[in-house]
Length: 68
Image (tube, rainbow, N blue to C red; front, side):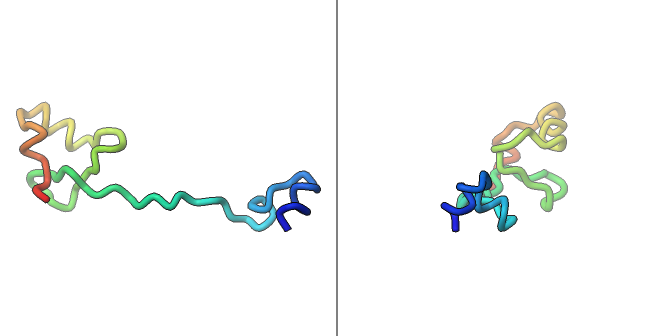
């Protein structure tokens, strides 16, 4: 099927409507909001606003780290 699709100038994913997805699992949370524990951040993407505000208020990254 893939060969036939490629022969016609398409990828099999385009014809079937699926894309290859990463098998990488979501990152576990590394930081937690001090007053609202439902707000977490893994530390891998752009800094969350609450994280930036906590640092500006005098907290350290160690204060916000989740003990695992």
